[in-house]
Each structure stands twice: as C-alpha cells, then as structure tokens.
Image 1 (tube, helix red, strand yellow):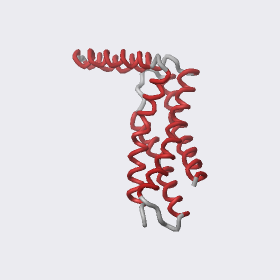
Image 2: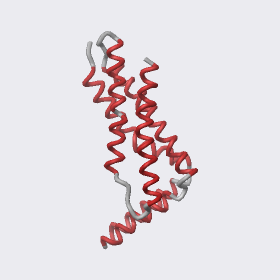
Image 3: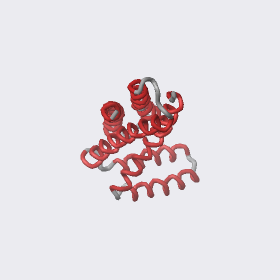
Image 4: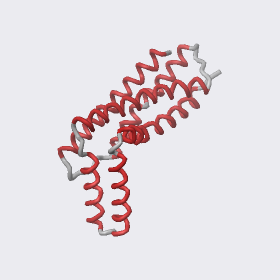
Length: 168
C-alpha cells in the first residue's frame, strides 16, 4: 500500500509541478500577462487523477474491497504528497528564480483594476496585495498559502474517491 501511495503521489506531484514551472516561466518572461488560473486548476485536477487511481489500486489489492475510511486516508496521503511536492517546488522557484513574484503579480493585478477604473475595488485590492506582500516576507506564510492553493482540492478529491470506490 505504501508503494501505491508513494508512486501515485510522486506522479501527481510531478505533473502539477511541471505545469507550475511552465506557468511561472511564462509569467516571468511576460510580466504584462496574467497567468491562466484555469490551466493551474486543471493541472491540479489532472494531478489528483493519480489520487483516484491510487485509491482504486488499493481497493484492487484488497480483493476489490475498501472502506470509506481507508479510501479517504489513502487519498489524503496521496494528496499530502502531491501538495508537499507542489509547495517544495514553489519554494525553490520563488527563492531562486522569481523572488520578486509578489511585486510583479501585485502590479499586474492593480494595473488591471486601474484600467477598469473601479476606484473602490482598486483600494480594496491594494490593501489585499500589501497584506500578501507582508505575508510573503515570512517563509512559513508562503508555505501555508501555497498549501491552501492545492490541499483543499486534494481533500475534496479524496472524499469523492472514497465515496465512489468504497466496497464492502
């Protein structure tokens, strides 16, 4: 079971990390273009297909039987591996290749709102971006924020996988 969890976690982590690297390189080389959130979200969902496959494989190794609890925990472990790889790769990218990410992203978001002319939204977003810049000064906050991007999706996929694959 450990091999199944590890293998599927590593494969999912590899997929989501490759897409993140490509999107980050694109954003760094094209600072005027906002990264596509749909592509990022889709890569996370594709990575979590390995979570579903891992739970299914564990069920197959148990004579086609798995409880909801065991299925959920298996999925959760795979989601934690995928998420940890995602966070680790982001930390490498951020600290070694893109240390001005928050400034560039903040400028991109605020310029978009300036062009729209919505003063209230601009004021609120400016405060939000300043808070994010402060948070990004602390490595622990970077880790927590990055986990918050991906881990909730993994938990939901773990629940769905456990519900759809449970068999007694």
